[in-house]
Image 1: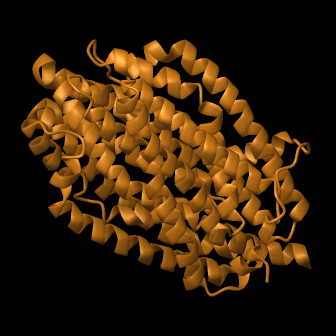
Image 2: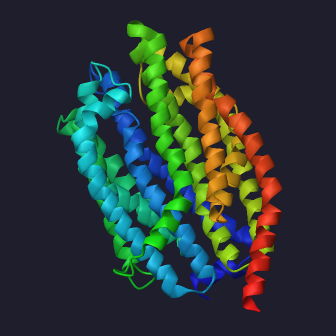
Image 3: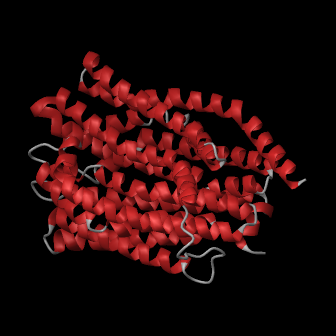
Length: 455
């Protein structure tokens, strides 16, 4: 039995675990790229804390374009595979590869030209700007490899090779772990060394992913040609919602850093931003595996949606939500007890430690309800409801921005950190209601339409 056939025939619970666990692990390891950099950078003598704040979230904005193409393309390809249309599936991958290449070139040129203005928008101060500028300049030169490694991995998972997808990430992360201290401290390169180590790691991941998708083991390989604007629009429409989540995470951090600088003032602004960066690194250890669970299992949904197996789609959603709730419950409990040990990886400053621990515990207050938001939004996207998924994503981000803007004006800078649990709690309730109202009608419509076309 080939791997793709398993998506339509294997027990759903088994499939969810087979795809969710490696994808969750891969996302957990993937986030180590930024966390390892921040950890080592935070211990650079004298300027460590400033370099940590300067490293910033702008890198996420770059790689989110890989997610845009990867998720949109893999969902589209999964549906075509479920329909047993190999030629169309091949065309989707060819167009996705083209888009990743184009985005790489455009983003590299744009960011190198505009990086000074972008960094100031991200809340860099006079003290942090030199470090942020150094890191971003070097990192941007490796944009092609970062986007390819991120985007192509979705097409490996989509075809039923989650362990290979996990290994793609492990190669880069392993290299990053080993090379970071060598470049930063051994060669005395500081934040430049952290950026160089990250680029080298992404090059290795990119080479592995491309080699696998050009090889003989995958049913759908990378090909060239069959370029079609309609296919490209379809990929972008399905990938836009998850792209918006990642891209606006960076934009929201711009806003958050600006708020913290404004209300924290010259005396506390940089400290608040540095503690926020540490807390956001911790939060990524939770939300990235959550993306792995909900995003990694989209292949089950899209394949069976394409194959018109409505009951398997519903069963998959139930099992995905169950896995997500178990994970978030465990992480919520751990967040009550281990934050201090995590913070110590970044800084030994007592003031930074105390405040970072408080921020982490505040950020994770609504992490269990957030399970519903992730599972249902990604589920709707996998089932060709990108507009609904987009609306729900925008709602969550809007709630965050409004809360972050309003709360500090009444209660001071510290209150801005409550924007996260407020947005998570409200948006999770809304997502659940919308999903329950739409799902049966949407799946029944798909089944009736395809049944009519087969007559």
